[in-house]
Image (cartoon, rainbow, N blue to C red; front, side):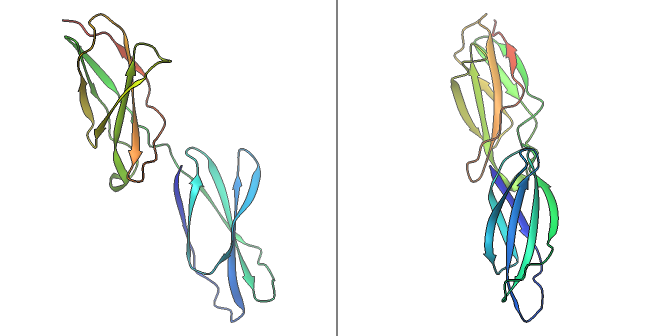
Length: 171
């Protein structure tokens, strides 16, 4: 999960006490109260999941416990998985290149390349840092390798895998 940050302006009424924040998961149809005592003007939801649309409703609550009708906003975090993975086979090597993540550049910590000899067993991984290419070495010629890439954020959150590509190293 990543972070959705909400910003607002508090009411100027003298009896304003706090803001309550509810989140509805549109697909699941569930609503939960994330905070029932916000007095500031910003809130970070660190429990949001990629590719899920949420409706956030902010309610102003006064010192008598009266609750406003609330204001809503819909928010969605796109999965920042890499796209455009291409593979070039060489002698016991595979060169992999991909497009940068759709996440803001300042939040990208790097990329992890996963590979293996079956789609279900991509058990090898290499953290290549914040670059968009690498060369896998020491591979067996004429063996089929499956390769995918993920993005991870500066806080360590990993995206889902890119599309899986397949190739065979050869001389």
